[in-house]
Image (tube, rainbow, N blue to C red):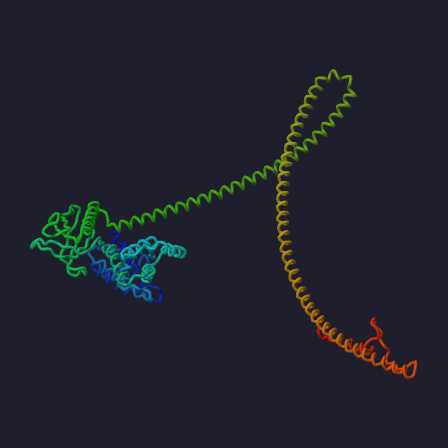
Length: 586
């Protein structure tokens, strides 16, 4: 009855949390009365409105407190439940109260009836703590059952990605989130609505209605001995058979207990695949459609009888209980591991504190040792001074009392023995001091060596950083020089182009000047020939006379080849023309 009460509480919790609250944040008494009346009706429990009024005579503490609704629900309703009620009708009533308020408004690939069945399956698989959630392991179990019922392949990798995303944000899903997940078609792609609906119905029949197996077979009648096709439904303690699979016209039941047995029969009367179900008061001959169905039914019925003999629950409930126990065990192991980790952490912290205490003690001991060393050195100096004073005094006494040496020899011997002891003590103190100095020197050497290694490492690191910086600077300088050379090359190319243009212009001018020179030269030759012939004529007629010729107004220019073909003024004009053309080309 405890398991039944837990299952009922889950559905009632959904209905109760869906009730509307008033301005004070409490559920009204009228709504609780309606809920109680409906629960008593579907659970076949006598309703006592007087008890409800008596229980809520003081409603100041709220409906879920010690004076609230839950104590009334446990005492006056759940404790009176006998199990003689329709579970589907009970769940449908609770679903009606909570679905409208919580069901997603977005369109789903499943019908409202399928959503109701998923909601009931959620209550069966959810954890026994509130608010109700279904953990990823149970989600995987449900999706695998649905995929198997649809005849599709299970996509483990896809669910692993979904599980990782789910674990990072929450512990599990609520009933409405599970309905959205299945209704979204994320894990049933390629399947039509009818296939998904049939799969949900099959899983609902197995997990909620405890249907272990169902299907059409032929049954032999007890009176007329005729064979009639019936729809058989196997549950943990009963086999019911109907006219058809709509379960509307029930024809009878085969009650199962630990004394029942099932055995195969040979073919007879034209019927094949026969088997016999033996009970205490009656036996039933059944004919399956084929050998495979026959073997499956025999095995399923035998398994059910074995469970009844051992008093074990149905396989899916036993599997659910084992999964819960495994999760509880893993949770306990995880908590134990966390506890051990905390203990180790605490022990580590305590150890650190102890080490810190020991370190402080060592520092204090070192300080005390240094103080004692200082006192020891001071005592040694005092002993040396005292020894020196005593030696001086002894010398003076020896000088003054040489006559008494014989008498005081024994005393002197004792004194010398004391001196030797003091010297031995001094040597021991000196050796201890040397050992401590050597230890300090070794410690200082190690410290210097560590400092030197650190300095070398810093120097190497600085050198590497310097090399890296130089390399970066070199790369930058190389890039800059490359850019500068490229700019100079472009400038020189432009200058070269300008010079080439000027050279071509000068070449043209030189050719023009050369042409002019040839023309002038021809003119001079013609003039010289004319002059010569004219001189010859004059000399022939008048004798040798000197012609007086008009001189040039401008002084003649003399070149390496003789008189110039143009005057100095013309030359200056041509130079100005060249300079103007050169300036224009630049």
